[in-house]
Every structure is written in structure tokens, then in C-alpha cells.
Amino acid sequence: MTDQQPDSGAAPSAARQARRYPVGAITLMALAAAAMWGSSRLTWVTVSSTDGLTQPRTDELLGSDWFGALTPLALVLLSAVAAVLATRGWLRRIVGILVGLVAAVTAVPSFALLTGSGATEERAATLAELPGRATVTEVVVAPFPAWLTLAAAAAAFVAAVLLARMPEQTARLSGKYDNPVFRRAAATEQVAKRDADAPDGGLSERVLWDALDAGTDPTEESSGETAAADDAQDKSHHDEPGGHDR
Image (tube, rainbow, N blue to C red; front, side, top):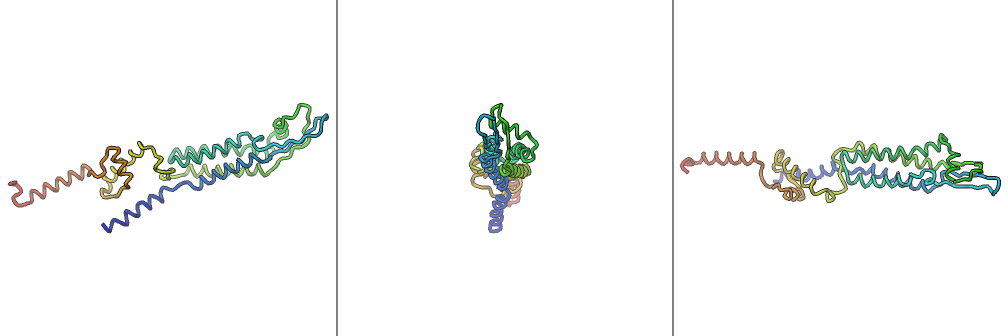
């Protein structure tokens, strides 16, 4: 019994190492969401105009004005964090793909603004709701919010890559949130595997209770072991003196 104690202690340690959480991806998504929300509150474009009748007008366009989907996309990333904690395997990889799409959509407006590839002046006049007679005299682009958004998009993209490459054995949020049906099925499978590979292998108390709930007796020997034990008992019975006479 003393020889098996180190093995039983090493098994949970190895399982804990295998079932690691995607801390890096979660941190990157949280930082990206915070950066996107902060950028939506900053001034992206300042447009000056005059209509010849009134005083010159200056309008400041926030990130939420210039790119209306910025705040909703930040909320999507926060929802993705919760989804990552509650899933694993292929579902988690699908979440990673969705995060990658969010990163791509987030990067487009800020990249176009920094490179001047879009109709910045016309868009600024439309968003500022200038009258038809007004003439735009100056458009000033603030680079910091756009760069901040690009950094958020890059962080979200890296998180998406990490999630897409996550191994199957990464952990979910907590075992207590598992569906009882799937948990009992997994317990039955573990008991069956224990009987086939290592009959004396230790199982956690929770697995034993889940197996009992599923109708599987974890203390019952497998059919092959029972037959072997019966054969050994019969052989010892026949080998006893006078065993044939009983």
C-alpha cells in the first residue's frame, strides 16, 4: 500500500497541469474590450465648418460616433470571455474564430482613418449633421484613439489564435457547472476505463458518486476479472485433498 501512495498523489497533480485555463487569451480579450470601450469615449475626428451665415462651427466626433459598432464589439469580447470559461474543445475553438472576426471588423475603420483611404471629410460632415449649405474647412484626425483601437484589435486577434490552438484537455470554469447528464456519462466511462486499464486505480469521490447516480457500481469487478476469480477458486477447490468428494 505504501508503494501506491506516491502514484495516487502524483495523478491529481498531473491532471491539474493538463487541465489549465487559457489565462493568456482571457487577459488579452479583457484588455482589448477595455481599450475598445475607452477608445469609443475619445475624440477621433474634429471637423470645422462654416455656412456663411452664422459663426464657424466645430464638432468633435467620438469613437462611438465614428464607429458605432465599437462599444457593442467590446461587449461581444466580454461575452466571449464568459464563453471561453464555460466551454472547451471545438466549442472553444469556434469562440476563437468569432473573436478573430471581431478583431478584423474592429481594425478596419481605424486603419482606414489613419491611412486616409476613406472619404474622411464627407463622412465627418455626415456624422456632424452639417446643413447642406455648410462647407467643411478643416478635418483633424486624432491618431491616438485609432492606434488604441488597432492595438485592441491586435490583442483580440492574438487571443483568437491562442484559443484556436488550445488543446482538448484545457479546463472549463468549474466542474460544478457541468451538465449532470454529461458528468454521469463521463464518470461511467472513467469507471469502465479503470476496470480495463488499472483495476486498482483510484477515482475521486465525486466520480464514484456520479457513477452510482448513472447506475454503475464502481466497486463491482469487471466480468473478465470475475470469471478469472471464479476459475481460480474452482481450481483451488479441485486441488484440495478430497475436493472431488465434496
